[in-house]
Length: 233
Image 1 (cartoon, one colour):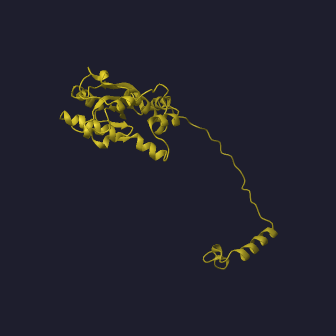
Image 2 (spheres, helix red, strand yellow):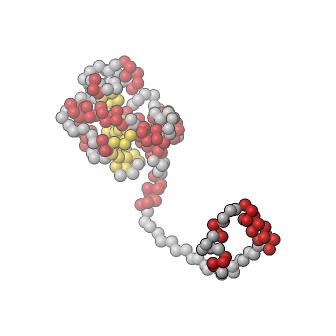
Image 3 (cartoon, rainbow, N blue to C red):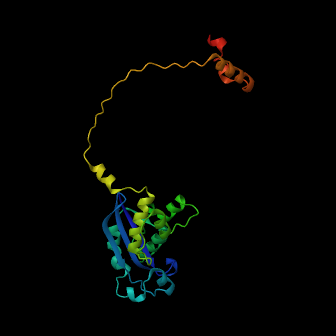
């Protein structure tokens, strides 16, 4: 099962008002585990990066001035994504920005059926709790000590680990065990003969039980037809 973990960094929050992608990163997973295959590019957004955006991801106009424009990397990105499902934290945000960029270079939008939103998954699993990437790393024991800013490639690598834990924490050893040749194991079972043990309550206990039933339970169902002693005798 091939999946892609994806993240973008942008000049702002809304592609419909002119905000652009300045970084895109994607990490390949196979059976929930990273393969080491990575796509990463900084992008010239062809506009200024506001100071408030730089405070979040750390990129300035100078960092992207000589980088390729989105049409220059669009084909390579689409080839890397292939037709695999795409995992992103707050996926509608990343899909919306990429769709806007693909539209500008006359390419099709991403199929929403491929979208896996890890933020929506976390909100369902941990309702009422902080579910940003840092909070999930702390909760699930993923080391994020190197995360000083919202770097897309690092965020993809962390999200890949978080997603693995949210999916049940599958371990590589299980994958290796599944590929091992099957071995038939035959167990020898010895038959042991045992006599049935019959327990008969004392007469006073039976009498006490009958008195309890008559005094506490009205119309006991096991005394009604067809189970009454008169009909079954």
